Every structure is written in C-alpha cells, then in structure tokens.
Amino acid sequence: MKKSKPNPMLKIAIGLAVLAVLGFFAYSLQQYYHEGTESGVMVCDNQGQNCKLSMHIHTNLELTVCGEKLRLPLETGSVEGPHTHKERNRIHIETVFPYDPAAQRITDTSKLTLGAAFDAVGVRLTSECLGDKCNGDLCGGVPGQLTMRINGQPDSRFRDYLWQDEDTIELTFE
Image 1 (cartoon, rainbow, N blue to C red):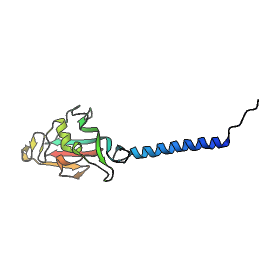
Image 2: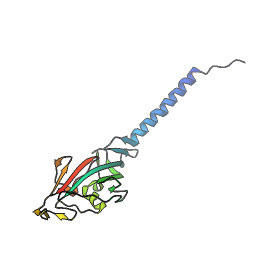
Image 3: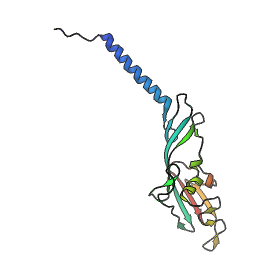
Image 4: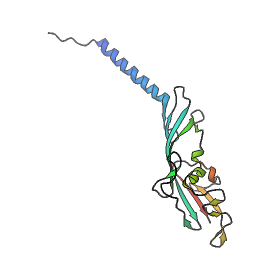
C-alpha cells in the first residue's frame, strides 16, 4: 500500500489558520491588557474604556521627632488600602485603581495620599503635626517645626502628597 503525501495546499491552509488565530489572540490581548502603565497592569473593556490599573507599590518613610526615630506599627491597615507589613516604616498598597488611558492617569488617587497611609496605620499627620508633636511644641527646649522632604527635595504637600513606588519620604519635627 502506498502512503499518500499530505496536500501542500492543506499545509498552507493550516499554517494560515494558526497564524490567524495567533494574530487574533495578540490583538485581543492588546485590547484588554496594557503592561507597564504606571507600575502595574491595566485591564480595559473591548472599547478600551472602563480601565482598571492593578498596582503593588511601596514607599519608605524616615520619621524623626526631636532627634528620635518614630516607628510605625507593624502589620497595620487594610489589605485594600495602604498598610504595613514586617518592614519598619515601609508602606505597601496592592489594589486596583480606576484608570483613564486617554489622560494616562489614575482617576481616584485617594488611597495614594500620604494622609490615607498615616490614617491607615493610626498615626496623626497634618501640615503642622506628626504624632503628638505640632509646630511650636517644645523639642529639646526649643519650639519645633515639621518639615517634609520627598526623595531629598523639600515638599509642603504633607497629607495631599501622592506617594509613588520606592519614594523616600522624610518627615522631621525639630
């Protein structure tokens, strides 16, 4: 009995079908998933609207009150919002944010404010107070003042600052 050779046209048709399926799959992924936006993964509906950005980010806090390091409580805060784990003075958030792809920005940043992070761990922060010390309170016999630096640069947004992944935020009351 003689073996029949596959029809070359059949091979071409199968190859084109495989390429079409792969192309459609790649196009579909492009419509739904956009990696690298901010520092997370964005998922949108078919029309590229109603987007959500999933992020897991951290910030480092250096807190000093009258020359002493202030330590945030460990394992505090909600998993859906800012919280701490076992690392000292490191805030985490793993959540999904509403995202506008046209403007390329998160539309509700309330969970990313420094104020939300301090509220979540139960430590008072205002533009004048850190913990139990407020501007004018004595620090070593001298009236103290709260200052803020973000990645080494002076800043005055305090509670309104939108922290970003791997920021170093220094709050000093002296």
